Image (cartoon, rainbow, N blue to C red; front, side, top):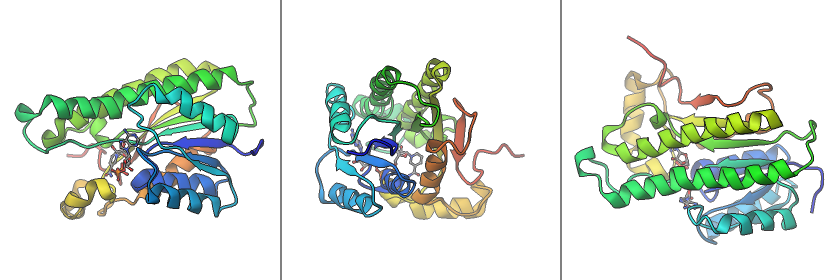
Length: 258
Ligand code: NAD
């Protein structure tokens, strides 16, 4: 167990943006607890890739929407790696079916809300309690970084329940930032735009065309590594004296224009 390195939990780390964040934090000297739904070859591969950077890592499979698993998981991190400094709430789900808000099913609405908002809230809560129980050390930056979405503010009509869940997650980020600010703990809302990952695989060609046609100021879609580098900058306090704000990683997509 290391005592001096910062220690991060990244949820949904077996692929996509979460995987890139875990690897980038490892390159920045973090020990890592890499979470995903289950023990898979993908998760084990990520853990091996993290360790190749000379840091400690453990695979920590649990369903973030199972609130009862949070305390067990956090205790496993403390026992296996040490006291947590950083939570990256990345795990998320899209809609079950794209379509008219008039046709959204209760099941899809519940799934988005449960994983993208409720699980995120209670993992923030569980981690915040543990951070507050630690002795404060200004040399050891502590933060909670929530990966929400441009859809926290921008409407996507065929994915209305996803938008609603991400808007909730954005507000949760502000609430925890306000609560934890006096304790010197930063909370950020990172809002990716169009990023090429397994989640967007089916629609990425359309997104690339729309980005090229002017939807984004940069006429291309982003990579998981773009989000990861921003997250690592936040986690290592390279944006000092910041908290509570939205950090957009969207190629300028949401810059108002007319
Ligand atoms: P992805 O589907 O490729 O990866 C998400 C990971 O989260 C998967 O490994 C999945 O198994 C895991 N996960 C899902 N539910 C979980 C649960 N209940 N418990 C534990 N793990 C769970 O998605 P991605 O594109 O890498 O997205 C990562 C995050 O970024 C999500 O929150 C997503 O909403 C957000 N985001 C993505 C984009 C984009 O364009 N890709 C844009 C904006 C926001």
